[in-house]
Amino acid sequence: DGGITQSPKYLFRKEGQNVTLSCEQNLNHDAMYWYRQDPGQGLRLIYYSQIVNDFQKGDIAEGYSVSREKKESFPLTVTSAQKNPTAFYLCASSPARAAYGYTFGSGTRLTVV
Amino acid sequence: QKEVEQNSGPLSVPEGAIASLNCTYSDRGSQSFFWYRQYSGKSPELIMFIYSNGDKEDGRFTAQLNKASQYVSLLIRDSQPSDSATYLCAVFQSARQLTFGSGTQLTVLP
Image 1 (cartoon, rainbow over the protein chains, first blue to last red):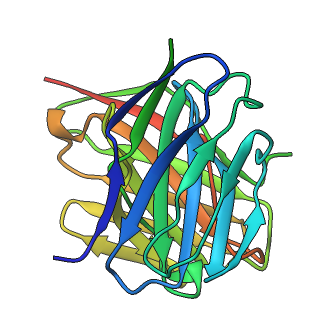
Image 2: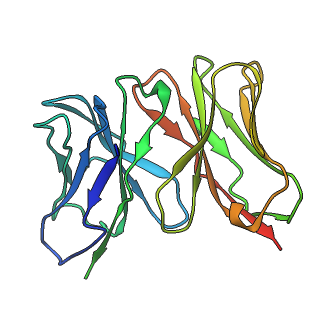
């Protein structure tokens, strides 16, 4: 079955450490997105990519980095520059036009220890 | 002014009642509108989408769109405790991605 797989489900980061969140899709979608959600809050866009080897900053890109080397994969790195990374991270994908809506992965919950 | 606004709630309704969730948006060029349901600790799942003015029904759910007034609503008939969740409104505007509201928390009381 087609879908989006995020891993790990839970991730713990030490102060000053970089961590990478995985996102893989087999829906043949062109576009992929990363969102951050804090408790009781809506979704905030971190980065998005419309095609391979191209990506754009969202509203809160500082302290994060991404790559899009393959159509199926869009990993997110949370760097040590992100001072408050504890949140629920959601990856999504869509056909070329987001007008048809997103499919979301199951999310990664990141906690700083 | 936020681009997509929702009442944050919480909204409580008794079991069997109609729950009404509302969303307004700022961009008159918006083309498509989505309602996602998110259970606590889970990812959002798409439950309704609408492109044209008027009503769209799917089971107990009805989405209503009024482009002239720039609002979209979701009605849940015969509400069940399993409908208790946060409902996110999302709008495809002129940008390349969806813009989300902050969500309305719904509680259906048994």
